[in-house]
Length: 260
Image 1: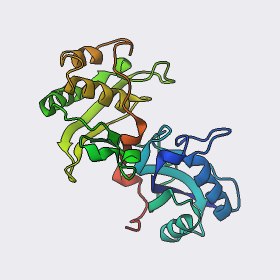
Image 2 (image 1 turned 60 degrees about the vertical axis):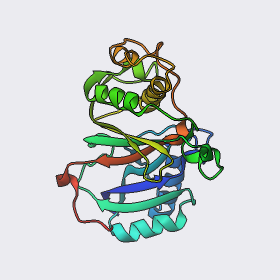
Image 3 (image 1 turned 180 degrees about the vertical axis):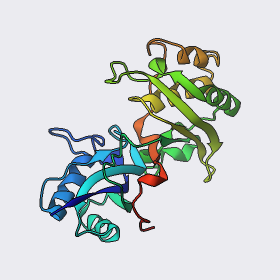
Image 4 (image 1 turned 30 degrees about the vertical axis):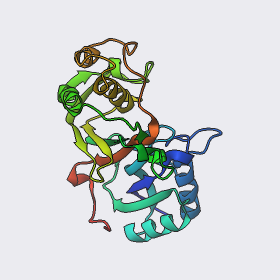
C-alpha cells in the first residue's frame, strides 16, 4: 500500500528512558514509538526525531517523522498511537506533510526549556524528577547577563560535549531568556537556536548557575564562548530539568491542517 509522510508532535517523560535514540539494550522513546507503528502499519517503520534527547530529558514538543499508510488520516493515526503507546508518551498532534519531509533535516529552529527549583520544596518527590532541585537563590542579573551574551552565532566547543559527531560546532541562537517561573517556584531558561550540540544546553545552564551562585566570575562566560574545548566549563546541569519544547518548520512543508 502506498505511503505518505507524517509528522507527529509528541510529549514524553524521559525519566524511564535511556534517551530518544534507539539502542541495542536499553529502553528508548524511539524504540517504543517504532514498535507501536509496526503494529499499526503491519510492517517495520523507522522514524526520525528532530532532537536526540539524552537519558532523563523530557519533551513537550518532540517532532517525529515517518512514512505511514494512505489508509490513515492524521486524526485517526493520532488516536491509534495514543491508544497503544506506553503512558510516558503522548501524541499531541499529527500532521500530513509534503513528500520528502524529514523531521531532523527540515527543522529551522529548536526550542528548549530548563527548569530550576530555588525553594526548599523543589526536593519534593513530585517535583524533583522534573526540575533541578537546587533549593538556593540565584543572582538573576548574572543569569540575564550571561543569556544576553549567548545571542547570535558562536562556536560552542567550549560549552558542549567533547568528541561530537558533527561537521562544525557553530550554532545561531535567536532566543536566550531567564524568567521567574509562573508557579513562583524558581527560574526557567528558554533557548532557541537553529541547531544544538550534544549536552550543549546542560553545559550552558550549569555554567550560568555557577556564575549566579558566585562560584565563578561573570567574565568566564564570554571566554567559554570563544574556547576551543570544554575543559573550563562547569559540569552540565542535571538532565531532568531539561525539556525539548518545540521544533519549527516552514509552513509550506505541511500538506494539510492537522488536528488540534
